[in-house]
Every structure is written in C-alpha cells, then in structure tokens.
Length: 156
Image (cartoon, rainbow, N blue to C red; front, side, top):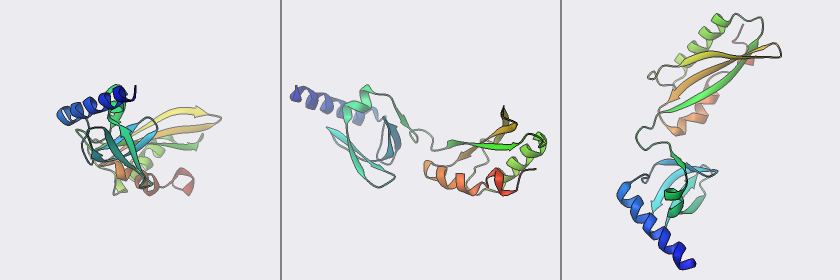
C-alpha cells in the first residue's frame, strides 16, 4: 500500500513536470491551504503559506484533486468588497463615492474596470458590492485596507 502511494506521487510528479499546471512562484489554493509554490520534487510539492510555514503536499493531490492556481496564466485577481449604506442614502451617490474610492486606491488596476452594484436590501440597509481588481494576489489584503470603510463618513 505504501509503495503504491509513493509510486502514484512519483508518477504525479512527472505529470506536473511535463504538463506544468503549477510552477515555482505560483500562488495556489488546495484544500484549505493557500500559499506560494517553493519546490516541486518528484514525490511532493512544497507550499509556503502566508505565515511562512512550509507545507509538503503529495503530488498526487495536484493531479486528483481540484485546486486553484491564482497565477498560472494571469496574476490579476478580483476583490469584492461588501459595503453597507443607510436605506435613505442616494444609491447613485453611493455608487459614485465607491467608484471614486477605487480610482484613488493605488493598488486597484484600471483594466478590468471597477464595478459597483446594489445587490441587496437587508433590514433597512442597502448592500453594495464594489468589485475591483488587483495586479497580484499579494495586493488583496492591503487593498481591502486602503479602500475606506463605509462607516468612516464617506457615504451619505
């Protein structure tokens, strides 16, 4: 049984090396783990997570399980911010304020263009989504903090 797993991981490693669904430096999510590929060996692949811990993942997982490669063909990633606004706020004004906030944020790229949608009304509160794009995965969290929250006084 152990030999079978080792052989399966070895064959999977060869498939990874030839097909290249992952490369060193790619940002991936597999199972509940997200991080950057630091090594690809014939038996296992090493992922460094955001806490700089190295996790060894058997290569078979990249062949038999679904995973996300955030940077395989394009490093651009979308960030969706949920923004509440008072029920009496003018939705056109809120939309314009959110577009302006996106334009002023240095981490938001201009193509694809930001989008703003009124997506829901919950208990007298309008719920907007600001959909913006970052050039790379590492900008996702800083971008969330650079856009001012709705309760900072920016919304009507």
